[in-house]
Image 1 (cartoon, rainbow, N blue to C red):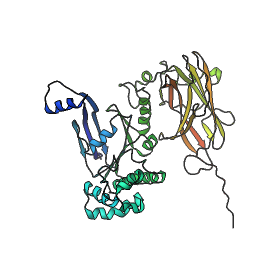
Image 2: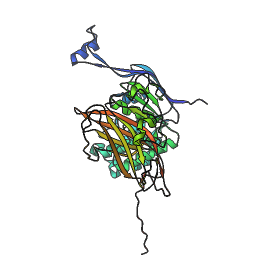
Image 3: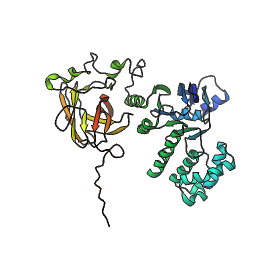
Image 4: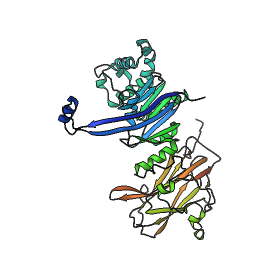
Length: 440
């Protein structure tokens, strides 16, 4: 059975006219000149996608990519220059929290005002009032004018109104991080309830861990265009490439089928893959399977040419017993002089959520300058206190040149890490708590 679309966006374009001075705007609006007296800024360029009912979709991208603009068009706050949007269901939008509040009204009066603007009757709002006020949890201030509220109280009430009107479609723009840590936890619980109830959610955030955790699919925008659509992990990795100006070629298959070697800067002879890259004479052998779909890119001025995982007994393996010490070794070759290189590794879960990791800058390690032809081995030693399960390890080789961040080589999801455990606790980590129970 074909999925029914809750939101369908077709060939949306949004162009703004940018004027050098107010008089140019006046001339243009009155048609007093035939000469174009403005510059065109295209915030969105031929954007198309569909969101199925019950689906949770994330939209990510750099600042200015068009994320908030497309949400405002979907909710009717903005009109597109061209294209169409079809929405099937009642929307609650968490965009600019508190927009439309009357600062002279009390909190309760603003609840009724916002509910009426959304299309609810007074009786329907009254039926939801207790839930809204309980969620906002601002006490007796609900009967005071909102102009007397702190910024935290203001956004709590605005969020509570938007989240408790029983929408069929929830649209969220960076709104889940309002208030203190306890209120944020409440917001995320509500978000999870919506997912379990099968509501449609469109979610914009710079919090990539939340995107990976909650979204079924992710849309990546870049300079107003759709740069890719796919699984959260895949799109988050692509987004990280965009952040450092190393986007793949337009011809690259988003699912890794073609163009990878040209885009990544890795050796064209394919020498990275397989044991030959590690140098058998130096024992850079990997007895475990390397991920054939690992994402690899960088400018190539320095490269990681091998890695090893060693358990507490010094054996090369990716299966580590929980609570034991293990090492990660990475071999790096320099192809030109690089000062203060930064070496890093990250451990992620299978959905792509970053669990932990470190780098030489965090650890305040002074790294040696790499000269052309130099080879160094970086060793990370740590205790395996992760819960039992399977994880992914990524490696990074970066630095700064002229104050600009540079990626020399990155290798995402290079291999799996298996933690074997006879005792798991809650979450990702075991805090190794000591518990005593005494009779008193």
